[in-house]
Each structure stands twice: as C-alpha cells, then as structure tokens.
Image (cartoon, rainbow over all chains, first blue to last red; front, side, top):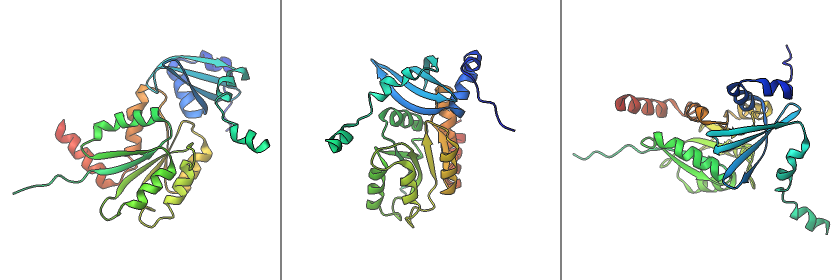
Length: 90
Length: 151
C-alpha cells in the first residue's frame, strides 16, 4: 500500500504533537540559521517547507512556519559558500 | 585494601554542529558515572584520534557519527571504521536530522544503527536511550545495575 503524501493544508490541520512526529519521521533537513539568539531549522516535507523556530534548540519549539514557496530557502542559500567555485571559474 | 574504580566506557561522537554536541553532552551527563563522551568536529578528527589509542588499553564502546560533516562525513567515516580490525565490531550509530530511508539502509549495511536527531524536548531522552541501546550488553548491564542501585 502506498502512503499518500501529506498536503500543506493537511499538515497545518494536524495537532501540534502530530506535526512534530511527522516532521521527525518523514521530513528532510534542509538547513539551519540563526536570528539573534533564536535557532531555526528548515525541513522539506513532501511538496512544502516547514521552519521550526526554537526557544531552546532541539528542546522547546516556539512556533512553526509552513509554506510551499521556495522563497523560504533564500536565507539558507545565502549561507552556502561558493568562494571556491568562483576562484576556479576566475 | 584498595579498590580502583572500574574504567568508564568511551563513547566517541563526531558532529560539526556545536549546538548538537552541547545537546548530547548535556544529555549524556545522566550516564557520566559509566560513560565518557568524547567529541570531534568531523570524521577525520575522530579517525586521527583512534589511530593514536591502544585498543587493548582504551576501547571505545560506541561511535556516534553525524552524517553531514565537512572533510569526512559520517557515512565515509563508518565505512573506514569498519575496515579497521580493532574497531570493525564496535557498535556505531549514524545520527542525522533527516530520516532518509537510504541513510538507514546504508547504516544497516555497515552493521550500524540509525537514529534521527530530536526535534523537541520529549524526544531527547528517548533518543539517548535509543543510542545507548546500541552499546554492548555488558555496558547496558552496568548502566542498568547502577540505575537500579540509585533508585
């Protein structure tokens, strides 16, 4: 039996504990960033993205941000160091 | 009569994320009477360390390897560890933020466990228990005996 992929709307409708469990079991880690003292992890889940904002890293979750827009990737892409590639190109 | 303390079992953990290292170091404090957690920033550093130790004198009881690390990632570190006679049979766990079936299959191929990093507080101790479960029976027996004596 094939398991149906969860949609963004279905994920938002889940109870918080189920959202956490789904993320832990099925999401793919994309990246990590910091905003002041807050640590944020980005996951991809089926066709959408979930950002986890921590009050205390990997312990207390402050809130989640869910979207299917790839704009959420921008701050993570900015962290990728392409200095080496540019040097080779030059 | 003097009685020396039994040596602690050594757990070697490689991860490039200092926050994850801190999280696990704090969580392992509960087992600090039995287990000593040594941390490394990548697989290369861990392999360099084990080249310097005499396995008859200090034998690691468990390797915990983050998958995504610079220089030498967790999968390649595991592959190299399994080629070393002295450490080929030491329990190992691949530790990752994603629960990708391909990574779990890789771990199984190399006789290692696969554990997904915790997302929030209620998972932290469950995950530490899951990691400890990969230790040898002797190590687990020691931990359980001490826990019983403490309760």
